[in-house]
Image (cartoon, rainbow, N blue to C red; front, side):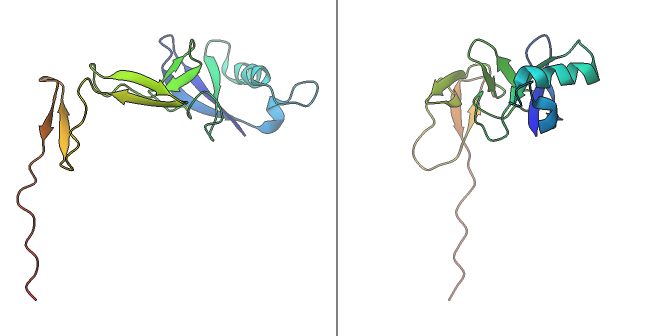
Length: 133
C-alpha cells in the first residue's frame, strides 16, 4: 500500500488516502508516485493535489497527518507550529519546533507562555509523603 496526502491551496494536509500497490505500477512494473496520483485523480477528480507520504518515514521526513503542511521547497511534511514565536529547526532529517528561549534544564516542569515569551514553572505542590513503615 502507498499513502498520499491530499493538500489544499495552502499546502495543508486535509486527508490521507491509501492506494493499492497494483495501482502504483508503471508500464515497467515499478512503483511510481505519478501513477498513484493519476489513480487518485481518476477516482476523486482532477481538483485535489496529492503528494505521496511514507508510513515508514522513508522520504519527505515524516508521515503526513491532517493539519500538517507540505513544504514543496524542502519536499517535506512539517508538523503544526505549536506557538507563533517558535521556529522550525531541521537537522539531520529531524525537524523540531524550537522556542525562542531554551527550556530550563533543572528537572522541573514548565509550560511555555506565549504572552511573556518565557517558561512558566508548574508548581505541583509538595512531594507526597512516604508511607510509614
